[in-house]
Length: 133
Image (cartoon, rainbow, N blue to C red; front, side, top):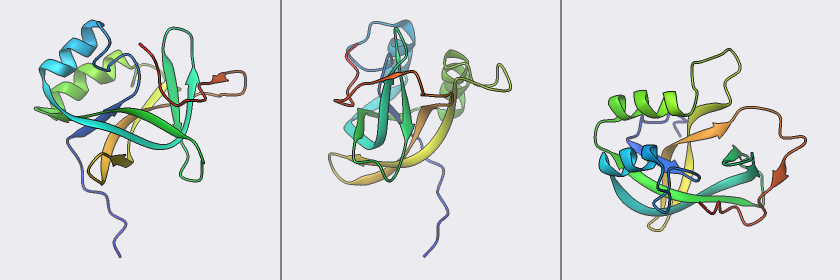
């Protein structure tokens, strides 16, 4: 069985990029992608102040819930969203973009997800795994 992951055009968002957000970056994403439905992955969701951060943990009994989008032009969209998420700004970026397995309403698929890349020691967990924008 191969463990190679095919690069995907799918993105799961769980915070300020969701449909209920009126943030300009959410509007940008929604105007340049197709909403595919809800999804979730194993892990924890943390409150970071005005936005959340998620950690993927395949062994977790908890889930992070979000929305799945098919990106129209992934290279262009990721260039914009990576800047928004602060990727590439320092040696210890707040987030990393990673492909992980996600459970959708129609089955399992692989999606890009922006995952929190800092210590979670003093952060509050959002027990529901759902961030309310």
